[in-house]
Image 1: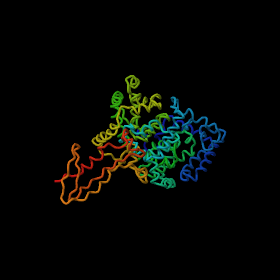
Image 2 (image 1 turned 30 degrees about the vertical axis):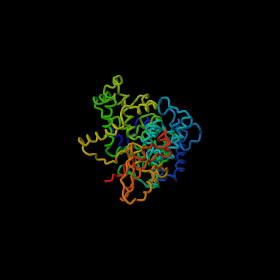
Image 3 (image 1 turned 135 degrees about the vertical axis):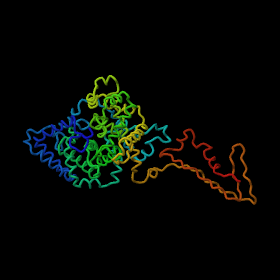
Image 4 (image 1 turned 90 degrees about the vertical axis):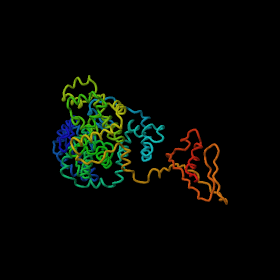
Amino acid sequence: MSAAYGRGVGGVGGGREAEAAEVAEVAAGARAAGAAGMAKSSGENGPRAPAAAGSLSGTRESLAQGPDAAAADELSSLGSDSEANGFAERRIDKFGFIVGSQGVEGALEEVPLEVLRQRESKWLDMLNNWDKWMAKKHKKLFFSRFLPGSEIRLRCQKGIPPSLRGRAWQYLSGGKVKLQQNPGKFDELDMSPGDPKWLDVIERDLHRQFPFHEMFVSRGGHGQQDLFRVLKAYTLYRPEEGYCQAQAPIAAVLLMHMPAEQAFWCLVQICEKYLPGYYSEKLEAIQLDGEILFSLLQKVSPVAHKHLSRQKIDPLLYMTEWFMCAFARTLPWSSVLRVWDMFFCEGVKIIFRVGLVLLKHALGSPEKLKACQGQYETIERLRSLSPKIMQEAFLVQEIVELPVTERQIEREPLIQLRRWQETRGELQCRSPPRLHGAKAILDADPVPGPPCSLRHPSVCLRTPPSPAPKPSPSHPRRPRRSSGSGQRRVGSWTSPQPQIKPLREMHVPHRMHPQRIWPHRSQPPRTWLPRIQHITAPRRA
């Protein structure tokens, strides 16, 4: 199975979408009108992407060699740049797919319009003050009793509003910061010719990526051109890694929500921070994560773990496409978007949780195992999952409530890596360390510019300055002790006065008044300041 995700041509484009793509490819040979429309599209997109347009010229020429326009294929021309009537809009769902192409899906979770507007307002405020939210409210702090957990995480679990999803993904993944740190880099890579050994493989994979989506349904259309530009730029950005076919659906999903340059930097973050080593030549990282998933399955569903162990089914046979494509080719599209919202926020832990949920509900009971007596039946069960367990609301709830802690998911890689080194030796792929979520990525690549504390000043509480010493008398006098309180009043003597250290600064988050710290008092407690001054005053010998 891992060989299917190597550098060959077969690869990821299997299943229902690949068959439809082949049918569309055969029918596209008899379409002259569609070719004219795509020629118009290439003319419009030519100044923007000259390198991609030139590399796709052979594809467009082959399409123009068909019979007359009377046999034009309606499916292939649907959603192309030349489409001007309203017929296509009535057949396109809200995600951009042709109606009926995604099979029979369950009822979509419709968010009330008023709730959606409220979420959009909250996300707009959060994105406009992103560094402040990440610094103050992403993890549990002193005010955890007021904010039980990460507010950003809770909002991602509820779902990012569709109008802001692309922008939120850029901020969560750190792609926005990468773009600011590398201005003009993508344009430079886009203008470069590229490595011929990768260009041919990329071009043959373009029509396999979501052929029923309006962006990619037209061969040589703007969607496929942008996809070619992003994948070619990555091979130039990481020539030692090159191109892997599983990167194509990842880049295609990003292009559905953002322009090509932003999608490129998000792809870089996914390959380097979220899933490092997944797309290397020997796929060692995905093999190691297969062992991690199988070990976590024993804690979540012992029945499924025992069955897979008895059938001697390697995890790579069922989890390779899940993990390398981030479930973009497995789940219904509404569920894919919800999973990606949480994935960009919390990292690869969400991918593990989704895989565990699917295995638990597919093989987690004796009744379900009655029809899985052999390896073939078990693999078929995992390839044709029940629509119920993939339904959006059910899946998200199961992911959140899965009985496995974050600490277990973070510790298991260390255990499996030690076992790998004992049995197979050191990993040959020296990939960068994996970062778990948006907070870790922001700490690794801080936002350029002044820190948040300078843009949003904090309230600092200090001790009042010490009073001026009284004139020294002719003879020294021992300090007198105050009765009852146990505090010492320091007098004046000929020796120099001890320097009283200022109280350590106490930073209060922006817009937090000190009265909110002590809700029932207008001032701090009485014993808060005096005792610290007397503690620092040394005793006289």
